[in-house]
Image (cartoon, rainbow, N blue to C red; front, side, top):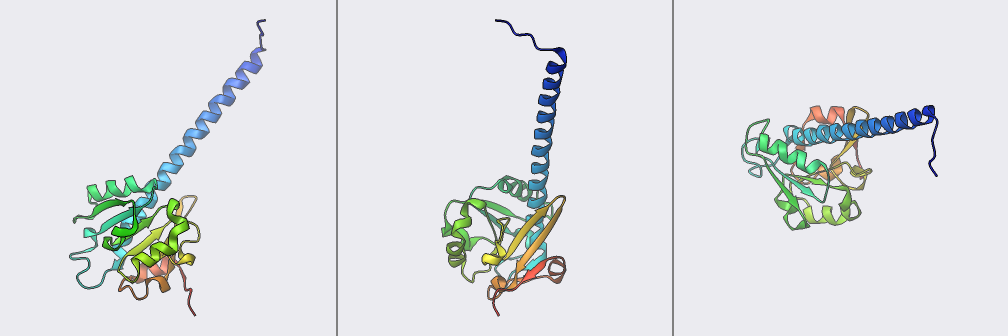
Length: 185
């Protein structure tokens, strides 16, 4: 049996499929922009942090960036390290386990490790490793810098108690634009 649909139905269906594909493409593009923007933010955080003594020889552009877990931001940070926008000798590593976390200057923690945050913070201890993530509640759970993305803006939560004792110093300009939280009384 051959069914013939009215022309208006075929046009409406075609328009609906077109709009669906258009909006899916727009959402994918928006997600790519958010990932790129967040990667640039993570990369630039090093310009507002001072590491103690000889931990980070030279300036912050010689930073060793590490990604713990699987996160879409990793390839973007790696690209920035290769392009060296600030000069220097930035390096990027993906970690599959906690063993190498102490050797990082900046440790970005992917969402797939969010259930192991206390274990990660215990492994890093008081080493001067800036812990960063976009995991909701990251700073309140003991992380140092939580990146919050909303629409076309990026906000930060900085947990100064997590920074305390590591020898890291976060510069005032970053603290002025961040929501600073303290966990200990």
